[in-house]
Image (tube, rainbow, N blue to C red; front, side, top):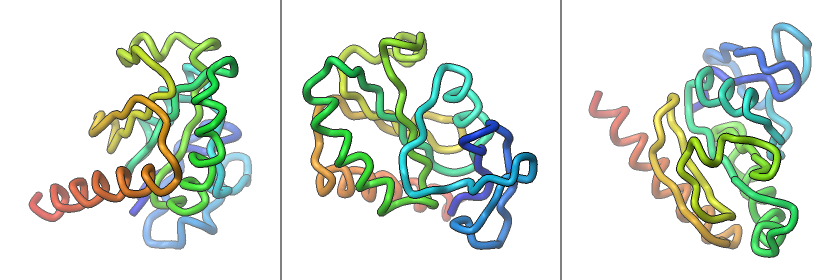
Length: 150
């Protein structure tokens, strides 16, 4: 479960605690923390979300000229509707940021899954919403097992 999330508008970290994350609002600007849709981020936004989010963050590295990226966009959006607020979904335009190189992304579309600021998994290439859901569920189960053992 998401314990702390970053506001998609002002990029402020917000503790969620035991309340319903789906109803959580930013303590600074009052916006909903989760809208059931991916959040477009730049380098600073990505850094804030990865650093301040306590829970899983899934980043889609894409570019507007990339056919497979455009094909995957509705599948990624569907996964966001399905998995938020338990997972934060971010869209990072590879043409407008330096983060893909820093992340070691060599091909797009690329998915990078973080948990509590640590990279847990990555996948390169197009996935349908069903494939993405299976991939994400598998990794979320691994995260949950690791947390249970701690």
